[in-house]
Amino acid sequence: MRFILAILIPPFVFFTINRPFQGIFCAILWLTMIGWPVAAIWAVYALGQYRTEEMIDKVHRRY
Image (cartoon, helix red, strand yellow):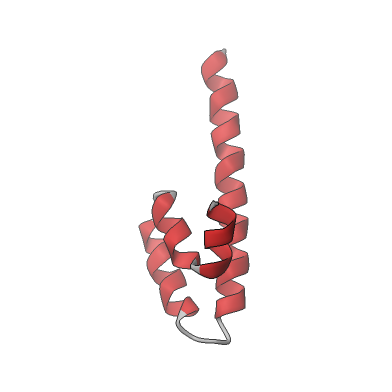
């Protein structure tokens, strides 16, 4: 679900993963038609990084 939001509404993803300053910058970029694809790619990349960090934290909590 977040990946779909990352493509359609990129700034929303940054706010859901607790990165508000990146969300504000992404919103400014998203408002331009030229910057929208860049913002969408950036949001998908950031979401992938966030999921990787979550998995690493989960592994560290086990040990």
